[in-house]
Image (cartoon, rainbow, N blue to C red; front, side, top):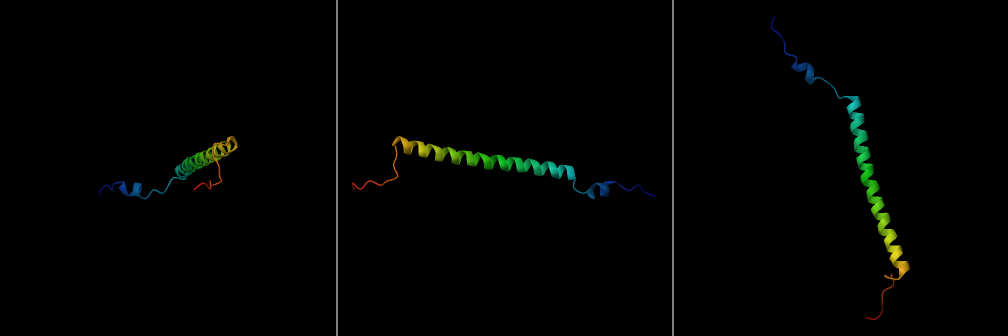
Length: 66
C-alpha cells in the first residue's frame, strides 16, 4: 500500500476558539479606544467653545451692522 499524505488532515482543521476570542477582544478594545478618543475630542471642542463664549471672544448672536 502506498503512503497517504497528511495534507487532507490539515485542511480539515476547524477554527480555534481561543484565537477567535483573542481576535474578538483585540478588535473590541481597538474599536472602543477609537470611539473613546472621538468622544474625548468632541468633549474638548465643546469645552473650548463654552470657555471662549464665557470670555466674550466669540458670540452666537449675528451682528446686524450689514
